[in-house]
Image (cartoon, rainbow, N blue to C red; front, side, top):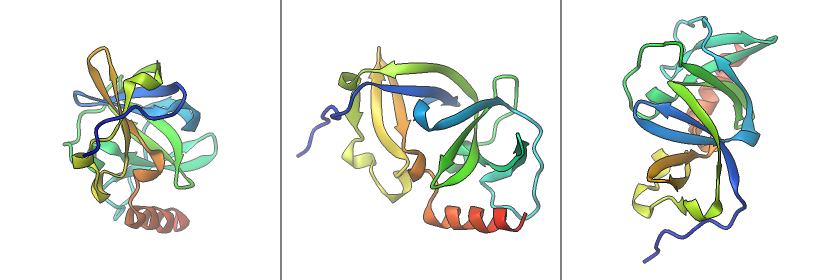
Length: 161
C-alpha cells in the first residue's frame, strides 16, 4: 500500500485562490495575468462551464467557471472575484475564481501526492496537496482541468467567434 510521500521537486510558488471555503493553488509560472472581474459577453448556446468571453488586450478569451467544473453552485460576483488568465492545453482562457488570496512559496516537504482514493478521470486536475500550517491547499494541474470533450467544445466554440 502506497503512503503519501513528499514529491521530489523544488519549492514551488503558487497563486492561492478560493472557491467557497476551499483553497486551490496554480503554479505562478503558468499564470499570464490576474485580472479584476470585468463585464463579459455571454454567448448563447455556449457550454455551461463557459461563462462568456472577454477581450483582454486584444485577445478574445473564454471565461471558464471552476465552480461549475468542481460541482459548486454559482456565487455572486463581487470586488474579490478575479480572473486568472492562463493557457490550458494550449488554449488561452480565464478561470473565474472567488478571490485570489496570495502568492505563496510552498516547500517540498509540505507537498504530498494526491491520495489514491481521490485520483480518477474526473479529478485529473488535482496535481498534489499541500499542507501549510494546517491549511489544506489543492494544487491544480492546469492541463488536467479541461476534459478532452471540453477542450474540443472550446476550440470549436472559439473558432466560430
